[in-house]
Length: 327
Image 1 (tube, rainbow, N blue to C red):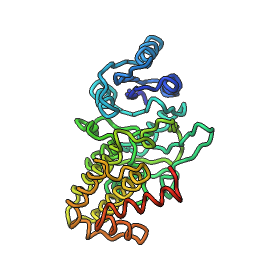
Image 2: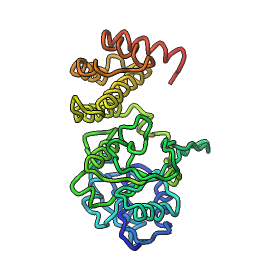
Image 3: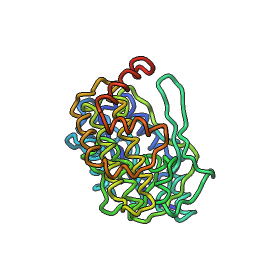
């Protein structure tokens, strides 16, 4: 195997982590790499650090662009990539030295279009947790990926990192730069629609570093990331015909994402925010369609209360946050 792999790394305000990330890619046991560092208009020393790496290793190319977000940066990398295989690494993360060799080997052995592994969450206090993909086997070929995507406990398709893609499957598919959250899953959903096959390994080879300014743990743009995740769920739900066998799960996921956003906004005291108003409007639009979705008792009461009186439900969740789960 001597296939060229394009490694796309979006770079934005990651000075403390960038060198470790790039070093882990440079040190891969698989050497035929095209490493594309996309400086997304980073205002710190990252642009100079990227250029310095390009001088050290001829496999590294640097793209400097105006800030447009992680999806915009990944798209710029895809537009510039020349490899037959694509992988994405976030600049504050790092990968095991044999990850790319492992993923490519599995792809060839099982004749798959996507090859993935699992990853760990590395916390600043030194603790590590491992993501459970809920697959029954340590390595398994997923041929019907659309059915696989709608398995309730499958996290495999939620992220684009820790994966290797055949570039021929991507073609003109790009990340949606209008989404600040859920863009990974939407990209993978589009891959599933293309009828690709995937090989999934439960071996952990990608390190997701939980930084203090993690996008999922901040009030990014007034909670816009939570809204965008709901919008992504709306798209998937809309894409299911009323007779589709996947409609129930798509609807359940949409409702859960709405309730998760409501809970977060209640904890942040954003009950009267524009973001909360967007959620209420989405519920009004989809209220009739979502009545067909069967919920477990865990979500049913809160969902019906939010349908009837969003403010009442939000204040009850606010009280819960204040007295039982401060965040």
